[in-house]
Image 1 (cartoon, rainbow, N blue to C red):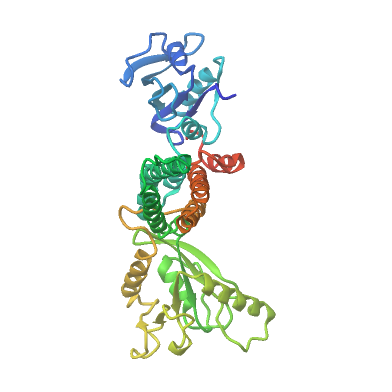
Image 2 (cartoon, one colour; image 1 turned 30 degrees about the vertical axis):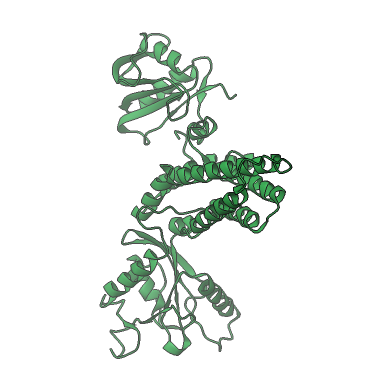
Length: 427
C-alpha cells in the first residue's frame, strides 16, 4: 500500500563497521520513538540512543537521525539508524521494525521510487543514479553523477519553461486573431524566432554521446586473416588468457567478447575468426560471417591484415608480430608477446575513445532519453516550418508531452517497474 512505512539496510552487506538502516513513511518518527523509548531528537541532528525491542531488551547503542519530510530524499518522514554492522545486530533491529504495525521491508528500488513519485527526482536523475550504482570506471562515474545530480534535468526544465512561454504567446495570438486590438503585432515573428532558437538548442543535445557505449564499453574489434596475432593481442590488452592462442589456422571460430577497463575507460574487446574465403569448414564459415557483422558494429577496428584490405578507412592498421616479422611493415608495429609498442596502441585507443565518450561536464543520453529528445526536436521542427498558428500551437502541445515523457511525468508503468526493480533493496 502506498502509505506503508518501509525500512531496509541501505549500507553494504554485513559484517561491517557501521550499518545504516533507513525508515521512510508516515510512521518513521513513531518507529524511532518506540525503539529509543524517548522523544524524537532535533531534526537532522545526530543523537546517541540505546535501541530496545518491544520487550525492552537492548538491541544496540546507535546514532539516530530524524528527518521530517518533505525535505528528505524520499519526500517523506525519514529515520536513519547508524548501528554496529554485525549480522546479529542488523537482524535484531530489522526484526523489531518488522514487528511494528504499519511497517514492512522495502522492495527493490522502493526508496528511489518514492523519491520519484514525490517529485524529489525526475526519471533522468533516477537513471543517472542507476548508472552511478553500476559504475566501474571513472568515466562512467563522472557521467552518471552528472545525470544523477540533475544537470540534464535542469536543461530540460529550461526547455519546458521556454515551451510554456511560446505556447502562451501562440494561444494569445489565436485569441486575439479576430480582434482589432491585437496586443502585439509582431507576436508571430517572436514565436517563430523562439521556436527556431529552441529547436537549435534541442538539436545540439542530440549530439551527446551514448550512455550505452559508456556503460557497455567502446566496441573494439580485432580482425584480420588467420594467424595474424589477434588472439595474442587481445590477451595482452586484457592482461589474461581470454582467447585460445594456436598456430593452427581457424582456431578462433566464433567471436569472443571480453570487457576491459583501460586507462579508466570501459572497452569491449572482440576477437574474431580469421577472415578468408577458402574455408570449406561450415562452422568456421559461420564464425567468419559473425566476424564481418562485428566489424559493421565496431566503434574502433584493429586491423591485423594487409593495408590494402582495410575494412574501413578509420581502421587502425597493426603489425602485431614485431618479434617475428620485419620492423618496416606498414602500420603500427608492436609485439603482443614482448610488449613492445603496446603503449602506443593503448594511447591510440584512449584517444579514439575520448571522441566517442562524454568529456568533463558532459552528459550521456540513454536510448530512451535520445528517443524522447528526438521526438521533441521533431515537433519543434514541424512548428518552425508552419505559419498556421493552430498547427504551431498543436505542435507545441505535443512538444510539451514529449518533455513530460522525458522526465517521467508521463510514461508506462511497466518501464518504471523494470527500472526500479534493477536497484538494490536499500535504494
